[in-house]
Length: 327
Image 1: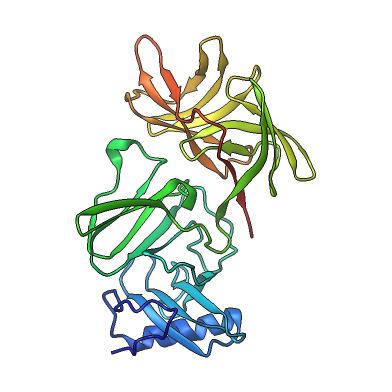
Image 2 (image 1 turned 90 degrees about the horizontal axis):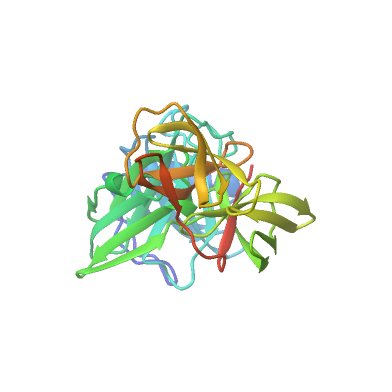
């Protein structure tokens, strides 16, 4: 058994199907030291041997400077199971968290590998003791395709490649109370949400300050996309909203291979579609950025007769983000 860690670390019992496996913990600590230098202490929170990409270990510990850290390490589909890779290394949260999560599209040999557009995204969540169910769900899927709850404190799943931490929610039930929060957004090398500040909106455009934006980047509220960046000057961007004349975005859905969503007199609508045989009411429409790397919810199908009608998911520009891809 592992010794109880000192404060401020979490005094949670070690979870996972290999909680007593000191070999995996040793491999994780060695990998953590290899990536980030020595860590005088390291206490396991999760030791899971059997996941879609191999073993997963969550550690809490101190670095060489006395800082409190939290690390998530996994195997990959390209390396032996005992060669763990650092996927997330973050400052220990304050206040202490009630759940720890990670969403990453980097499941190859190194954290900085380019994401694969036809691959999948790995997601995990570890909840505090006393949690009876933990659910990982993605807002890029339609409501009737949400994930089934996992009994207990640990949930691990593969999501569609387009999923990011920003579009992933963790729902826990403890003592009969349900709580939903966004997934933690700090996996190394994955797509991250950058908060947009100093927003000035008119009827059809907005300007704002944000780092990492490019022409074609999607501007999104938590519920869905509200516009697309049309100009970047230093850290100041201009974006056309969905009702701006000339705004057009490439979109897809579970049953639409390719379409264009653009502004019409009736509001945003699908102005061209291809590669579909049927579309379901309630289906989530995803918008792609200029590089096709990021896909985010933008609308939901409201009618299919006589033609496909959609309704934007977001109706506010109060809290906005863009998704950036980092190496």
